[in-house]
Image (cartoon, rainbow, N blue to C red; front, side):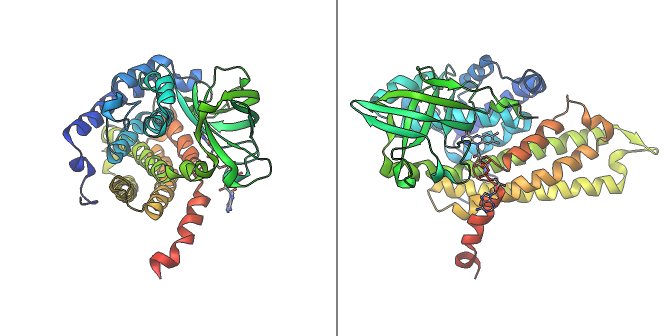
Length: 387
Ligand SMILES: Cc1cc2nc3c(=O)[nH]c(=O)nc-3n(C[C@H](O)[C@H](O)[C@H](O)COP(=O)(O)OP(=O)(O)OC[C@H]3O[C@@H](n4cnc5c(N)ncnc54)[C@H](O)[C@@H]3O)c2cc1C
């Protein structure tokens, strides 16, 4: 596989069809609704069910388990194409598919039976809950406590910043099994948010990113049976972080998607709008400004595709994913405003995606490791890779 070829060439025909279905779904059903979802601060469950009918809640779930059986490159391209329309929706959907894929790959027969089909059908949403009010980047500092009792566990604590917190029924929850212990005491549980002892807290007001449905919840004497244990303490920390390179890579792809769409809208407008007797695009200053956007967009795509190919091949992608996320996030934060500027005042109107995309580029700088955490990761690997 040549990581520098357009990665669409690397896909099987059924994966290409899935990416094409996502592209059409994004253009026809997500883009026209995204501004309304932002206004009402919620995405109707019907939109998730529609995505499910296109296979987008089960991209990586094996075909034998009712999914699409697609690889990571296809997932990356789907993330880019959906984020063109609405990164909040794309992120929410991918988080549900991630839970479905983890359950399919690592769940017990009972867990698969209880959760998988409903997630694939879009009848349930999923979320993965690490962050707490007192612990974000420093994941081992979480304080939610799971106490062993006969036949199960009782969990107490408060979680914060969960994607799909407003809606998710199936949550992979990380908690400590011993107070004041370190990462080795963290276990993963597969919980049902409709059970007693689970209290949803009001979703956050989140300018431009309401489709993510981010918020917190509280667990008070929340009782689960032994078969809710998803990862035992000796595995949970490692398993939780096992998907992080993939997450960094698809967030990078989402940033590329937002900039690609912003550039397309700005070019379309610049080809029609006239000033000083010429099309906007015939003014060299404006054209050069958008040329800068195109150059950095393509550089970010290459970094993202390289990380995606390494992940699909099962090779070490730690550095590649951190480089891709850092560059693509900062590229989007730098360049989206430039596309908006090329539209004049028209770019401010909410029927254009700039406001939502700019807010989501800020969000991309926090999720799945902040830009500072990418710097930490890249910095730790500098001598090994560049000396
Ligand atoms: C919309 C949204 C959705 C999210 N979804 C989820 C989810 O589904 N599940 C989940 O578990 N979490 C989720 N998160 C939380 C996200 O993972 C955290 O925001 C992230 O880990 C950073 O934690 P924090 O915000 O608490 O910042 P902190 O860790 O408090 O950091 C604050 C600032 O200090 C910097 N900093 C911290 N440590 C260092 C250091 N050692 N060196 C230099 N700088 C440092 C950070 O980079 C940041 O700029 C979501 C966040 C957002 C915004």
